[in-house]
Amino acid sequence: MSSEDIIQFLTNRRIELGISQKELADQLGYTAQLVSNYERNKSLPELSVLCKFCPVLRVTIEDIFTCKVSNKYNGSYNCQFDISKFSKALKLARVAVGLNQVALAKEIGVSAATIISWEKGYSTPKLFQFIKLKEIFNISYEDLYKGTLTSSSPKKKRKRFFIFVFVVFVTTGTAGYTAKTIVNRRNKNNTTIICF
Image (cartoon, rainbow, N blue to C red; front, side, top):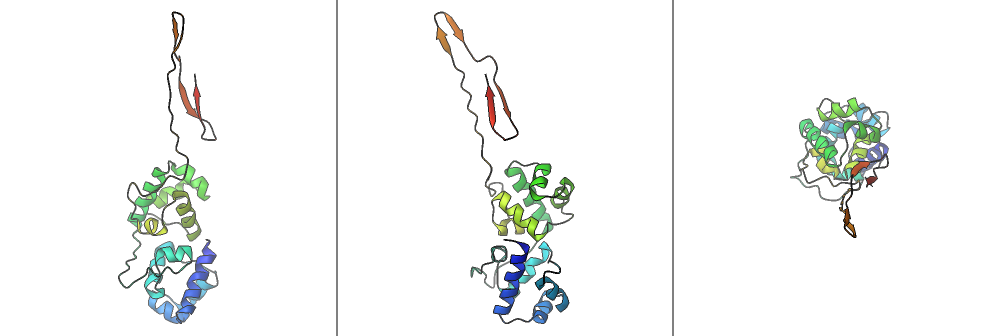
């Protein structure tokens, strides 16, 4: 999915429900011009305002980011964006997949300062950056957006490295030999090297 796909989905959903740009704008508390700019990709909605589209277009956050109507939306669907919950969830997910802020920044294509800003709740990612974050963390859009992660929510997408070191005893005659040094380290390819 891309930001453009999301905007196209929201536009198609508005048309499908027979809602005009002005009616949508009135319900969102925006101008019709701003809605028109969104739909023509002249500007993109902030991550934090996507939840305002949910009750009007009768979709969930997951629907918006997957660009499919799941029919999971109901009148009691609660969608709120809380930047403090989001920032905590972002940090929790990053740590769970074993990335530091610099490594995550490289994967997203931003500076480490930007990641720090997101994690402190000073700013939020753009739509396309949020999509990348979800892919890296391998969690639902809903959990990341609402900040409803638990410490067990993120599933490591990266390979887990289990190192089993066996001390080998070799006996020949009366002499016994053991591994003298065992050095564990990872090279640039994240391959574990065990040196004896």
